[in-house]
Amino acid sequence: MAEVFISYSQKDRALVAPIAAHLEELGVEAWYDREIPAGESFNTFIRAKLKEAKAILVCWSPEAIESNWVESEAEYARSVLGTYLPVFVAPCALMPPFNVIQTEDLSKWTGEANDPKWIKVVDRIAKLISREGVAAAARALGSDDEQARYDFAQRYPDERIARKIWNSAEARHREQFERRMVEARAAVETRIGVERAALEARLKAAMPAFEAWLAEERRGAAEGPMPDPLDAITPAEHDVRADHGEEQRLRGEIAALQSALAQAKTRDGELEAAKADVARLSDESAVLQRALVQANAKSGDLDAAKAKIARLSEELVALKARPSERHEAAGQLNSIIAAVAGLLIISGIFALSWWRTTPVAQAPPVAQAPPVALGPPVAQMPAVASNVEKSSQPGPTSPVPGEPRWLHAYPVDADTHYV
Image (cartoon, rainbow, N blue to C red):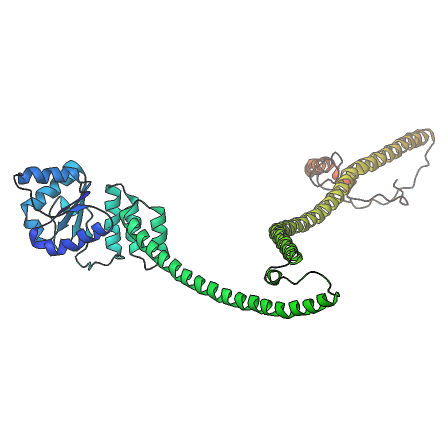
């Protein structure tokens, strides 16, 4: 079953063939050969292929625009199937409704697997046929990195191109393995030759030892059993035990080193975490120090404000106390004036009584003195009285409310006596 139906003009077959070949390389089955089986109706066969395909790749060119078959297939894919996927294989201007649909331009594509426009076309095909491995395959083949292709084959092992990549990788692995096998056999032959020479040297040294033992045995002075040539080529038991002990020791050292390495890695992680904590605490300490400096500055301002408030409070209390002192002084002065006025009145009454009871001598006539003006005319007296009355009223110029202004016009001195 074809996954992609390629609609094109027969005149553009040479332009369409590379597209079909690259899709086949990616493992996508594309139908673009217009050969119809014998006995099949062309319309019926084409309609079946259109319905069978999951994507309709319409290759537009001036010749394709003139083809009724291409236009009808494109319209059927666009309006009925919803699988319309257009590309330009030659420059041309499409007519509505195809001119409003995004169409990738492959007119200058020369078959490069890493061409960005070709990658976009493959991505859209992969979505329509629901095979994301096809898009991944296009990127893997477009890369010169063998490891990228190998990774793709491992991630999408069921893709056709993945099997091809794996077959190539398997052949490469087998070749490498065979080469290493030949090298290993040569190394074995070399090692066998070295060990054979050493064993033959041991066997050769066993002959003089046997002759010496035989001479001592003839005299009855031989110590130990007869030398055995097999012992010369067989490792002694104690040597085996020594080798085993050395192996165990080395294994223990390796295990200890691995444990130390793991602990060192753990400590490195803890050290990094501690460094991060130190950095964080340093930042927090700097923030706290700045906050403390600001708090100290604000505390100093607060103390100054408190001192200022206390001073202002004292001044306010003092200001409140002054009017009471003035009222008290004014009261004392009024009492003194009242007492003096009472004494004057009593003195006047006493003097008047004395004057009435005491005879007065006849004074000699005196020359008539010229009249003296004693004051302003009588018409002006009410104004003077009014002024005196006004001066007796408290006013805004009076320092103490309720006291007459004339009281403060003349200072009262304790050493001055008023009659």
